[in-house]
Amino acid sequence: MTSDFDARQLERAIDLAALGGSRVSPSPRVGAVIVRDGEVLGEGYHQAVGGPHAEVEAIRSAGGALDGATIYVSLEPCCHHGRTPPCTDAIREAGISRVVVASDDPSEHAAGRGLGILRDEGIEVVVADGDLAARARLLNQPFRKHARTGRPWVMFKSAMSLDGKVATRSGDSRWISGEGSRELVHEWRAASDAVAVGIGTALADDPLLTARVGGSDSVTLADHQPRRVLFDSLAQLPPSARLLDTAATVPLTVVVSRAAPRAATDALQARGVEMICATGENEPARVRSALDQLGAAGVTSLLLEGGPRLAGAFLDAGEIDEIRLFIAPLLLGGRGARDPLESEGVERVADAVRTLTLTHTRVGDDLLLTSRLREW
Image (cartoon, rainbow, N blue to C red; front, top):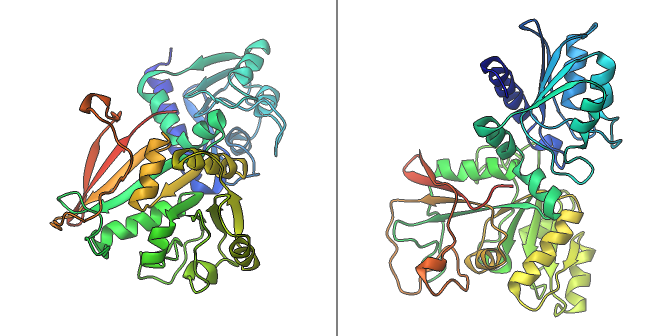
């Protein structure tokens, strides 16, 4: 059980962990605080993939002997040799006598092993629960899903009118959401490993799918660029597409099916495109196949931007983990106007997918609804 003092230090460790951002992917975000006799001796967080872990950064920050100190960590310390030595060794060698952890590590090589090793060394181990543990887990949903399933965590975003339409019957969708909402989407892109659309969106909008500072109209690229992923079963992307113009500088993966013509896939590869062949008897199965391959390539988070048919296939596949919907104060009407999710759907309301949470916030004139479908 954690005390109020322990809780405050864990909150600080979680705040530090968030500073790692997308720079640490596919590793988790981790923060650490070292305290002795009520005094904070050192802090640290995982700053970049392959760099020192949070525990090591905190120990270095503290300096000197740490006998009898407590280290507060947002995630269970690692106990295996990866890009860096085990953090359990660093904790033991520093003389730390107590470890307080906010959340577990579900990875196959961890899953409680690190805590067991520390206990075997005579170090007291305390694991938090309740709101603190939930907050720590939510910080690392992409890492946790990838560790458990091998697939990336998927966030679906869409902008729709007040009557629930994402495009007019002619296909026009620019712009439903306001400028502030579009700027926010670019921030989400920069925080993701990959961003995905379907071939319908690519043909209609000719997007770049890059993350740009200041939103869609800016030419300034964010420091981190997500891998662009295009679901294009028949390899129909035209040679003039802007996605191809930038394939040499920003990675582009095209997901095709076995029905894609060889000449078309060869032409895309000649432009620097990475190809994935998704297999399966239907669209949801091919979505899962593609996510398996993207996950194996190290993609832990994917921002799904549509269109409606692709988003529907992801929903039918059970592979949407969070939804963020911008609702704009517009009415489009039209029987042929597009819905955000064109899936097979359910026959009865009782069979509907129920979300775990629903929150809202204002973004300019738009209303942003955020809903989590599952927690990992």
